[in-house]
Image (cartoon, rainbow, N blue to C red; front, side):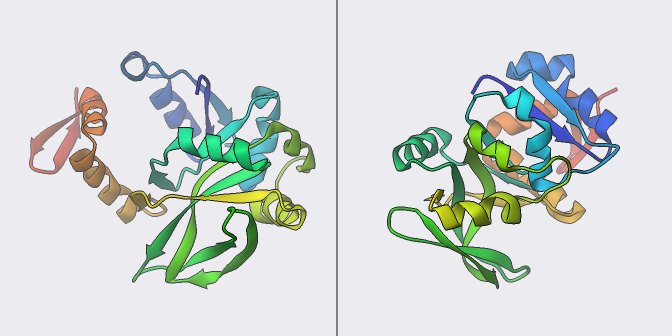
Length: 212
């Protein structure tokens, strides 16, 4: 993976400053292209439409911003290429007491045949996927959503595949879950703590303030 883009809607200028921060760039080696949607939110596939010129002819790996997980991208890319898929979604098993998620049905080869109803147990789409650039031509100009625009047509064509791998997964779709995920990541991933410590300092257990 050589090039990175981040889609910014709400608080786009804050996000831009964060991802272009000189300390963070020096620590990670990552230079982001910022796609600004602050004037109009384009939806889950409209965001890809806006990036199509930046994507060019490259295979694109996508990670949705309201979840955090770490799939084995290299193995997933190998599966994607071997299967002949146009789009491969990363899926994982789940059991939830607090929220229901849409389940995904697929055969032994990984070919997706159904997008199921929301349930509190099953196999879910983790928010990570791989997409080939030629199918971006299917996207309408402007606002669009991933499921009706790409998932459903590709299922009918037999070109949507699922790569199953049960990895740690954090739902960060609200303030409480986002905050909780930060502390869990610091405990489980040393590199995450190192990056946080570039800008923040812990004044007591689990209490952090910005460095001056």
